[in-house]
Amino acid sequence: MLENVKHVILVLSGKGGVGKSTVSTQLALTLKEKNFKVGLLDIDLCGPSIPYLLQLEDKGVHQSDEGWVPVYTDQEQKLAVMSIGFLLNSRNDAVVWRGPKKTAMVKQFLTDVSWGELDYLLIDTPPGTSDEHISVMESLKGVKCDGAILVTTPQQVSIEDVRKEVTFCKRTKIPILGIVENMSGFVCPSCTECTNIFSKGGGEALANLAEVPFLGVLPIDPRVGALLGKACVKELPESPSAKTFNEIAEKITCT
Ligand SMILES: Nc1ncnc2c1ncn2[C@@H]1O[C@H](COP(=O)(O)OP(=O)(O)OP(=O)(O)O)[C@@H](O)[C@H]1O
Ligand code: SF4
Image (cartoon, rainbow, N blue to C red; front, side):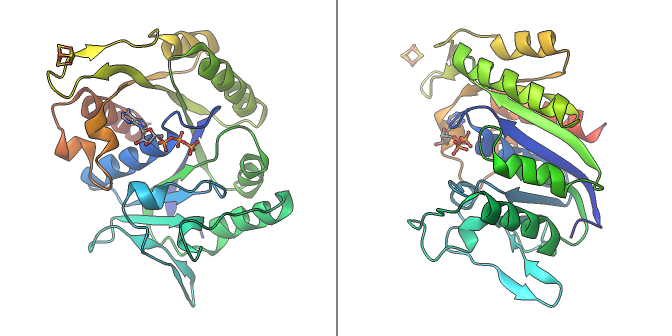
């Protein structure tokens, strides 16, 4: 139920493993730190990683008269989370479903979860432009979707895939809020020097080419990978990643 959800934002990536779930999770935690009421919906049915990234793997959802009650990360109920991972018996269980069943599940997530009042609902999608994306777009018809954040890494192959996502968004008329370049350089844990392992600036170049906003760069920072449930902006406030997460949150919340 999205009636009382003010803003819906999709997080997309063309390729797997580029850090889309990390960006979704940290963005949700950043918005929570800024005192917004936030929801995080993980519709990556085959590889749900949000329960792990938020250390909620032992949690389950239950049904109420109003629908599925999401899992809250905190007592004040400022961050609500829903994932297929909460419905599986074990983290080793796999979802081996065909398209129509996946589509039905995604629709159910959008219609049957009792989100309550939310300022922002972030939807972490599976990589690519598959059934799940298309069904989310269909289910979101009539719902105000603010747009999509596209996550890429600096390598050419990832940039090419995100280019397809740009085309997908334009075709399905989803506004693009901007592109984030993740794993852009490596922050050494010993001296915090940032070294560019791969080429840099591909995400920004693509953003310029596609005429969409560039939201910023996030370096590979082992400290960020290890945060698991903790907000980067709170735990590592001086880090380059915290700066970028704050900037992205500001850009999103002022539109
Ligand atoms: N900026 C970063 N610094 C350090 N580690 C990172 C960073 N971004 C992502 N990671 C790590 O890389 C791995 C993959 O990230 P994540 O699960 O967010 O990717 P994804 O794009 O959502 O993958 P999937 O294909 O499962 O959807 C995780 O172990 C995560 O902790
Ligand atoms: S980045 Fe810093 S700590 Fe890491 S190897 Fe280089 S100089 Fe040493």
